[in-house]
Image 1 (tube, rainbow, N blue to C red):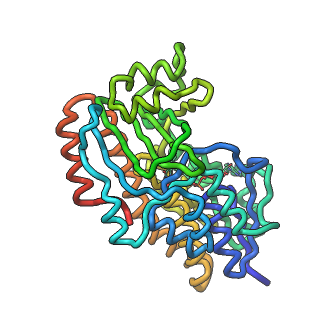
Image 2: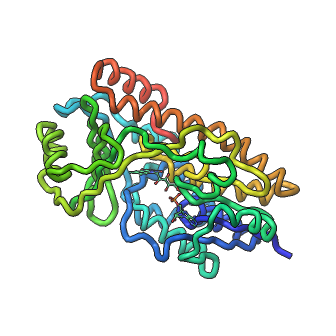
Length: 357
Ligand SMILES: Cc1cc2nc3c(=O)[nH]c(=O)nc-3n(C[C@H](O)[C@H](O)[C@H](O)COP(=O)(O)OP(=O)(O)OC[C@H]3O[C@@H](n4cnc5c(N)ncnc54)[C@H](O)[C@@H]3O)c2cc1C
């Protein structure tokens, strides 16, 4: 009989694992809490390493054709002067590819089409208490249930829950088209502009704020007060904001790194394993790679425990490091003092590390 996997969560990582396992002859049952594909969602930067993972799933071409390619980028000061470039030309030379920006709903649609019918049950949440039964019924359980993972809590306890990072994000889109990413860093605040597909420009802002607070005077008024004197690229977006279209939400990450991404016959992938703040723009990219690598290990190893050990050894140290760097970036962006020194560190880090291939 074919081997079987229960996948909890039909988001980015869960669908990637499902596609890769199904292609390898596994029976996959994906249980997704939501009753339909999301109508809205943030623009995701998909770096070349994630596009390669999508290629192995057979979804790379669709994502490249739907996504908006990034042609350039820079970190800027509030007056518009450059702190450091984002070396997209160098990235293209190294990888033969560039970042493609695609909204989360569009990416999920491509993944669902690639997976094909009959594998995803919508409106089917899984509780932590169901895990023992799933482990008995399936050869492997894959926890891909995102940042507030019930399976993580059941396996490792609430000490490893997602906690508020101290930064709140505002985001939305306006009509237009750009291939360039800019992140403008001021004292304790930042404002980003990125490409998105479909004739839209994606924008985001970040600042320290009390968890869950709302602005009595309206979010647009606050954003204009904070950023209204910044350079024209920021002001142009601010001028076009509509209160009802501005989204505000706290940014969360794991309170502590997990001691393992596997326990028993269960493996955690994506945000369930290593939820990080979006400062590196790569949580979804890592979720895709997790799904592909876990499936590859399950297909190659002699048995499930060996496969899960191989996956954990391959993915945990690396993603843990990325989560740590994201945390540092988040703190740096929130700095209110010594921003000259901070900008110098950012410039040096980009010169040495560059964008991820
Ligand atoms: C503002 C912002 C900007 C970002 N920008 C980027 C970016 O540019 N590039 C990038 O790579 N990443 C980015 N990310 C991160 C990225 O969105 C996440 O890391 C990524 O979606 C994680 O994928 P996942 O599959 O682990 O979880 P998700 O995609 O969140 O999927 C989890 C799924 O599990 C389902 N689920 C939850 N609980 C249950 C349950 N109990 N039972 C069944 N199903 C359940 C959910 O409904 C969901 O469908 C950003 C994040 C934010 C907040």
